[in-house]
Length: 206
Image (tube, rainbow, N blue to C red):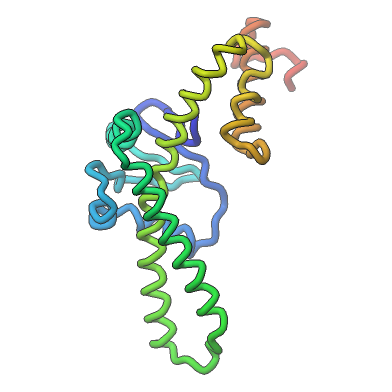
């Protein structure tokens, strides 16, 4: 499926990589009903597991959030504009705050003072991280639209069709995840063409 969040049985999964433990803690703790309510999500994805650098959500919960966001986009009800303005404002504030914090001589601050700053900063980043995950549903919606439009000019079986899609969805360069997905798709195509048995592949694939 398009986008960074994939489906596997009853789960929606996303590669997460090796992040610093503090950043991982911040992301994990951002999936909270209180924060989700604050940003206006009717559906929440608080039940989440992080295992072997992969994030797992129950599909029945994640799908509701995705449908909620895509519904806004289909209705063109102004939700996306408000979302982008709000999150950009938060990001700009945090960037400016970081510059101010960088100038502080922390060696002269007490542990309690530093704890207060970190607690406040952590809460602000949680408020950013939770709604940030709406981007994957937004990506799914617009990637589908781009594919539909490209099909008017390029046949679906064109060998570089997915690469053309990536020109619009990842304009600077193909991401590692997208590149890996593209290579896996080409490999799966070879398996199908050669009628390979996955439990007993030919030597050419070893």
